[in-house]
Length: 71
Image (cartoon, rainbow, N blue to C red; front, top):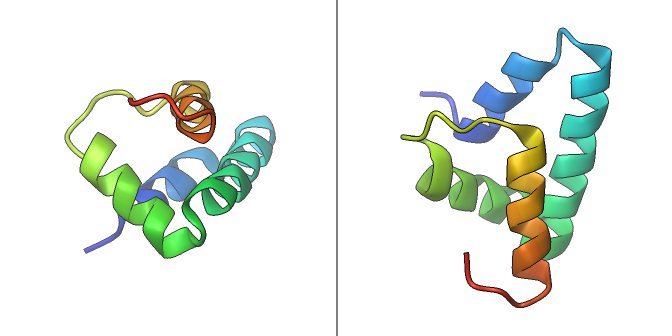
């Protein structure tokens, strides 16, 4: 079974702008969570059953976490 991170990657890789945004999201996630595995785990727990797959929405959530807000 694919991880949610892989699912997002496959969703956005056909669009170069979205692909660039996804890479920025991945880097930000690794900064905040320490590594890609922890970030992927957070994504799966937070968004795997959600229709919300917007990179901007997820990036905003990560920014809030990085600033110490509970999301």
